[in-house]
Length: 171
Image (cartoon, rainbow, N blue to C red; front, top):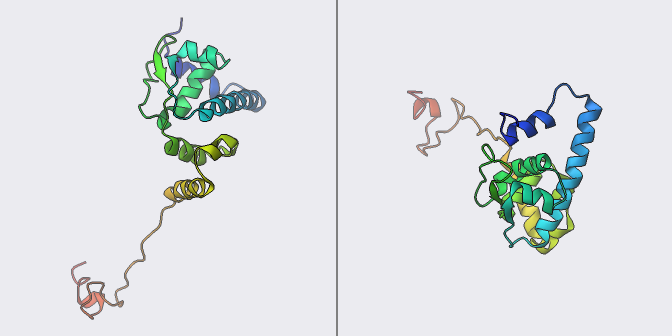
């Protein structure tokens, strides 16, 4: 048995620098296919809480424990209550009760089109809500700088003076 946690083992395997690009692509392609299948099932009954040990859930969804650990790592930020993924073991009971809006936004943030475009979302959110959530998430990463007040611009306090002669005098 390894001294590393399941999560550390998963991350070592998934981000192994010794593997070739093709090996990593193969691993991730297989993972994404399994992940998609799990989300199809979860989204079919979005209000049903799925709970069980890591090992039980892996068996339920037809994957090995390491793949389930990767799935739990990916969904953890979208859950109503986060699982103890840093310390979990095969017999740790975890919940997959997710917040629908958070999950959708996190899929958009991850640019996982194969997930946020799943047809199951159509029965959860109408098209307008999906568009709104999509745009909210995309805009949340955009940094907008406020227009800087020039020395000779009118002062924003409304005095009618130039900024340099009013509020900008001590700046």
